[in-house]
Length: 186
Image 1 (spheres, rainbow, N blue to C red):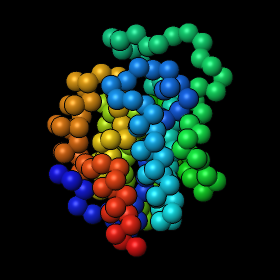
Image 2 (cartoon, one colour):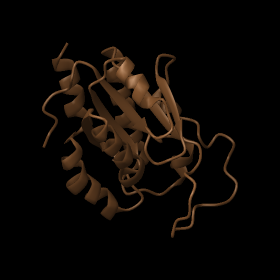
Image 3 (cartoon, rainbow, N blue to C red):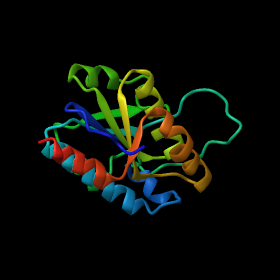
Image 4 (cartoon, helix red, strand yellow):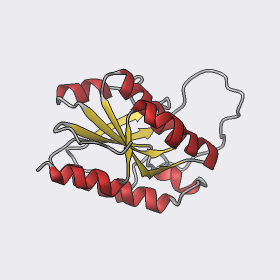
């Protein structure tokens, strides 16, 4: 279902658009995902709505069946992409799990600003984006997902998240549809 409205106190959450992602192959061109995410961030800032920039700086403990990527990372791997034009008023969240709420101050930050809805974009659709959307939904936020401002490592997980999971967690739309709603309010 397309996004029906943008709440007056909505916030944008941009998940894991950091320097390391430029080197990881994805289903959709990362440049398009970054451009759409940057456009959303600029629109939210112009409307005076909160922008949250999330990066991942580690991994959750525990064993998994899939090997984790190893090897040395470049020193700036976790830096948020400059194309997002980070601003001093943006809220920065560094996480060590897939979801942006676990072990961070994100819920407190959003609730202290009266946020009732979150718009989520970023990477990877089936991991960081979906986990953050699930957590936001569980915490009572209205959830909107900018489907052309996200991508994944492979097509099947991306399609499953967008087609099967997201409609159960919130509403989906394109970047332009969300921006149009932001400006229709003001």
